[in-house]
Length: 182
Image 1 (cartoon, rainbow, N blue to C red):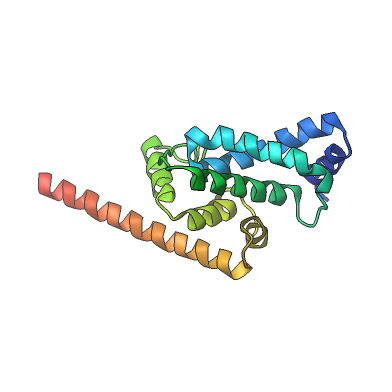
Image 2 (image 1 turned 90 degrees about the horizontal axis):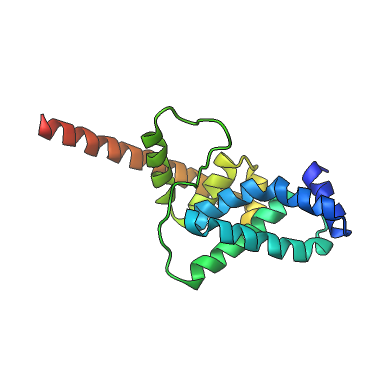
């Protein structure tokens, strides 16, 4: 049992300090998933709604999966509800919000990467971010997405293949643009 799991159980038993620590301990990853699915503009509201739902359900948290997996599953449901509720604006930029360290020396490359990931279908994007950005195992991601393990593996593989193709296409377009202007 990890620290977040202990905090979830303590918070479910009424410990206010544990509740605060639980929210702080899971917030960044919940926010990043929400930003990936619904966009930066709606990520704060979706993360807040996730914790409202989670806090209301903490007494029912049984620990069958990790508290983080449980939280991310709630976040996914909140985001899917948001997507179903209205027209989705394609806000990107915070999907891969940095947590203190620079992931690339070129900010434009980061923006391009976020745009590419954001162009993936929501199921592939979610599976990709859960496993490749947030570091969940495929098994944990399958639990979050409520689908078979093989489906997660397939979604991540297809997301990778699609991203590779998008990068190749972008490079070809960029090269063609340079050649025609030279």
